[in-house]
Amino acid sequence: FQYLKRFDQRCNLDTFRYEAHSVEGSPAECLQLLLLYCGIMDPSWAELHNFTCFLNIQLRDCEASVFCNPDFVQDTLRGF
Image (cartoon, rainbow, N blue to C red; front, side, top):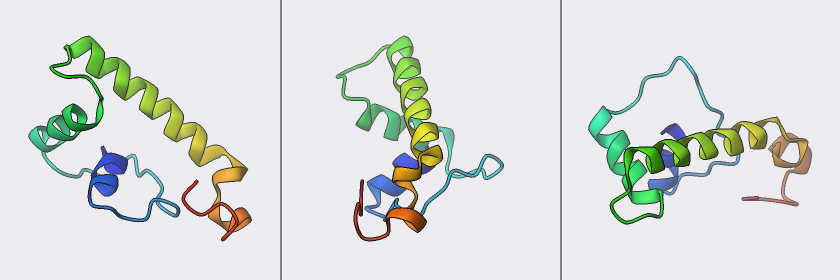
């Protein structure tokens, strides 16, 4: 949700890192963003669950990747 919220607000995500203990927004706002970005019209709960699991894995891997670390790649791969 933290990434989707900032993406929706057109914030720069290059330096953002997920904060596990940070509570942001309401459950309604979270659901609204999930419905907006999951890519399926009228998704089931299972489809929303699969979308969030996939997104979480991708974002975790992205944060762990040296290729996505702005300290290493700086201007070379901006927005990657």
